[in-house]
Length: 116
Length: 487
Image (cartoon, rainbow over all chains, first blue to last red):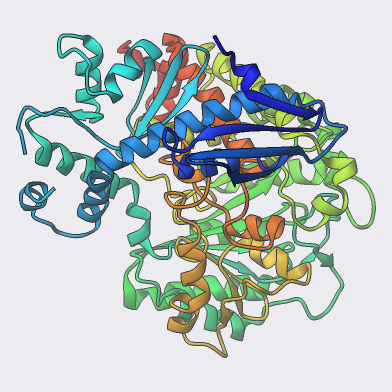
């Protein structure tokens, strides 16, 4: 059985990449996770064959104590969290909009809920 | 819509500790879920027989057959949290002089020497500013005199108070005054004027003499502690205790001695303290190497100081850490707290505005400080050249507001703490060159996130003593009242 470490392609202590299937994880989730890591890394998501996407990491500061393999594992968990957020937003994003709209303006909530 | 359907209502979440998730929803309710409950919950497969199911339902994370009614409640709480938006604009800060007798090493405004000319607001400008202030639709107005040292321009301070009171006869607003003074040269005559007109004092004390005098020094040389304390006692004699407050600034000199700072505040008779970190403006930036510390160091010592304060309360001395109280009020109640530095949209311009000595208007004190550093990007206009509508309804303020809503800002939008947090567009601009800024690496985000982490660990632990102290602060009641004991 393949391990997570085997999926991470370490090129050098400051350079690595991982390939993610965008049919499982949305590009939006991959981008949101990348944003959280771009203080420490230069990151780019690059298309591969089919739905596969390779996310390339380069450490900004070579002299930092960061472990690129651990950070990529953390990145993958962050992708999952963002995927869950997307899934939830698809299910209840309209409810969130309703809450905010109703907070600031008079609305017939019964009617609005019916139209969901 | 199927009445029995389990509707998961909107929330933000984050992993918390090893095995738990923290969830916070739009109404500000929070709940900790074990990972064994989190997955079934988001899959809509949580058993209706479990206690977690009912906790989620009662806190509006889940709704079944009463969705409109539930949304009505959540919306009402959301509206209450955002009440500050309709109070446009309460706080008006007037920089009536840039002159100051002090030469504090972290001065954020780059004050001028007390014999310098050209940095005083004239009574004519002050009256014009007051006219603009009363155009604010807010039913409450607070005019805060800032500097430099505002008492060094006594004529304008006095004229502003008298003129504002006169103008207010027409408007009937709730009107407050605060003077931010270093208290070094404030005399009894001035204090009596404050008493006569209900003016509050906000001063600065960084701890006992040795700590205070490290950075709060006179231009002519020597510390200010003795003069400040003498005038503080004089102020206590003339004004009510609650009308005199103090702020401290944390520097490398007192960060490892916060307990001593707190004990000094207790000894002086204050009922609380705001443990405030350095802001990256003015001399605080120039002297950062001599004054600064890491955010992690600040939060670690903040927690130790908070624990010391909690113990003081448990030992019978009522004493509040004001920033903790503010954050807890946001976490544990739906009520707005009116703290302009931590709001969404940012309080800049819509909750507070600052008028420079020449009548220029800025959305925040920090924006004016930035202007002193040579960048006028945040100048909303001038009270002689621009109309109230141009200043407070113009493109610049609209842009600041639209780019300071954490609900849609990158990284903030998915942050579990965003319901309680806010944005600082001025600091974002200073650090990155745009109002939106970059997180999670910036100091503002890092500090508040670590403080929220620390407080939520305490809330999760749910220690009865700690929670009693917190609720006594939030409710304004005594610890005994909270515990149902006789006074």
